[in-house]
Image (tube, rainbow, N blue to C red):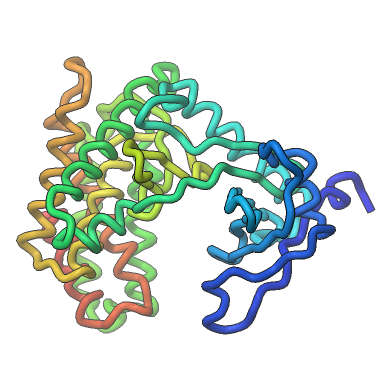
Length: 342
């Protein structure tokens, strides 16, 4: 066994079926718990009994039952078969978090999630208990005023990252965005709602091609972006502020790509939680204006907003690929994407 493989930490075996949404006991001598006790635990007294809960295939919560002190463990070994790759991915997220902190998201009300430790394939992260942006959308009618506040904080956090993470030595590259949009179209044509709609496929491809020829699409200063701006990755704790989580996809690109992605996710969440098209558009407009209002004076807000439409359309097509959505809803998403591109 090589040194990397020896550091792999397997998560505990959890319970079957719906009981996976609950907590289950973990022995104190389990390797992950033993590491937490020795290297992560910050209590004044020795920890007692431990329990765990699975958030996803790779992400678990570990909680000391007496104090209810909780830590997150992301087991990259559950996401890849290569021990070396898993360790590399874990270290990469640590680097991304530190980079975000250096760009002004280390302390204060708007910040990146803190990394507590990293060993082998396992990254230990602070646990932030609170409402995600998606939660705020879901309960917006029961908590008047809460959604605009979370949207404003999300916009400010991203604008801070995009402003301070600018990379003037990097050259703009539109090809990834165009390639990604065309991939979404191909996927929908091959086995999605556009399988029997060649005219719509042709129309979408022509529209993407037209955007690709626009010189303004490459008039941007590359910057670091979060890379996975979904409604689940922004958490507002009870004490206030906002914490961005899940930094593993951080990279350098057009900031409009991030704004467009988030706008698509927000619009979809509003529709999924009882809103109509008019409300989704209104919420999206609020997010966009909150973001643009935070940008430095030397940024061309109008051009950025226009490019964001392209990326919002591409992300809307990405959402339309989800087979678990009703067919009518997926068709409506395609229609929305066409409208954004036109």
